[in-house]
Image (cartoon, rainbow, N blue to C red; front, side):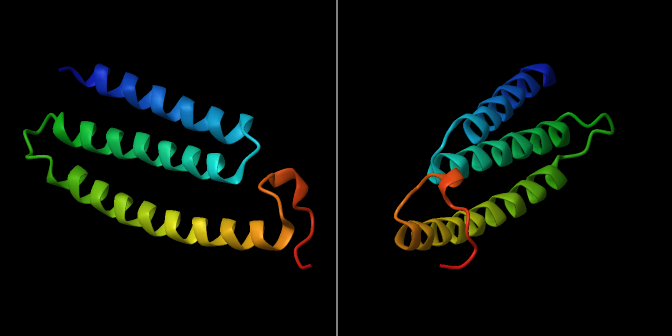
Length: 103
């Protein structure tokens, strides 16, 4: 498989994530869009590490991908906790309805 195929899949993931973040009016869908964008970045890192012209083993891209995955998991856990508290406080999941910082 060529590098262009990986990049096309990555662009598709990024576009879907961006559309999910912009078009949806639900906090969970926005969080899912962010995760899709991070997955597109991970795919780019691994693909470019695999297709390096110097003949490297591609371990750098995999290490960066593991770091991004760990950060994404932590971000998802914190994001879900924040969303749960916002829903509990404001009784809505719409980002546009949340206009106050403190109740």
